[in-house]
Length: 502
Ligand code: GLU
View 1 (cartoon, rainbow, N blue to C red):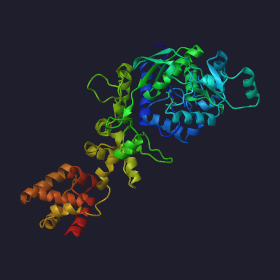
View 2 (view 1 turned 135 degrees about the horizontal axis):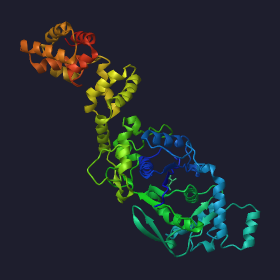
View 3 (view 1 turned 90 degrees about the vertical axis):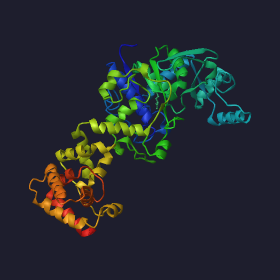
View 4 (view 1 turned 30 degrees about the horizontal axis):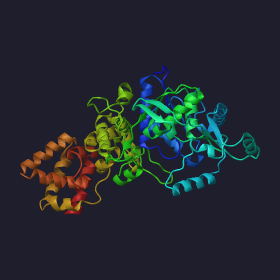
């Protein structure tokens, strides 16, 4: 292993970053930090036809939310910049020329229309057209054409692409840290375009050149890039460069375990497949806005493909850094389980510092048009955190602390508002009014004493009382609620309830 660990996350800004992409970034980050190396963010934006505005910012904000800190990148700078491929065009043209000179690449003048005709005619015969070693001699390129014809095409300014000249029949050996040794015969591979006629490199050339120039020690990326590995190995050989180590991560699978997790699965089952809300074009929900803690989200993602080898499931970022290793990344796809995602968040709802949750809760309350300070917010969070999974669910558990009921749940009224309820509530009002120290304990003691002395049914009284305070039969300990809203508000709700329900 190279002693200087440098890894990169190299997304293309073509839309919101899928959680599979976040997991790739996370594994790169954990690996880098574990080995005291550098985590580099490189934006691969050479395919201008797929470029989506806002995607680059979205990537950076997503990483920031997850607590994945970039060491070198577009915003952070670094000694190996620029870190955006569209700003490195001159570099790629130089390296493409080098491959032409060394004979590892050639110029191809075939027009898109000509290639389309070939594709169609192959299709009609039930074959697939591939631009490869077997056929290149018959096509319009600098291998098949005489030199003076190539010069003529150049002087006429005829557009061309640069293709890699794949050896005819050679076993290409590769090693992957997750999959072990792989051998692919070059005869099965095509002559990929490395450089397009618009003066832009394709992914393969730019990616390999940059990994080399940025001194990347380990390539950690999704399994969907495994088919490109043989070409990349050949490119390294053509340039005479040492290849970084590689690890191709298993796919994230649908909850059914069959096929790759897609946005459609999320839409169908009601869970996000993106870290943040995506506001452009076809909008999409995100974990942050749905009420997940970044700590829980990261913890869940870390365990989708990597296992610690123990039963331990709750890991802080520091613990993940400590324990992560590529040896424990599995080969088979990791099934995504939305229920488990909620479970993780529920765990963090219980273990995170109450002030941290309260800070989020204060914002929610503000958005609802109320105000609360962090101390009182913490008290409320403490009261209800056991009952919720998501931050966004806190409001439903606490809305009645801020406003008395507008309506009373019909089914609950039918069941709990009895003939005796009006006069019992009237008496209860007097009992509560007389209490000086309006704490949860004190009110509970006095109210229960009064119930017992009068031989009333405990459930009858307390359910009717809850109905009046909350409007429904839900919420935490009733005496905690009235202590929190205070005596004045409690009496007010009793008056209103008596008026509306009697
Ligand atoms: N730009 C590629 C992507 O969007 C990078 C693949 C790689 O890491 O080599 O995923």
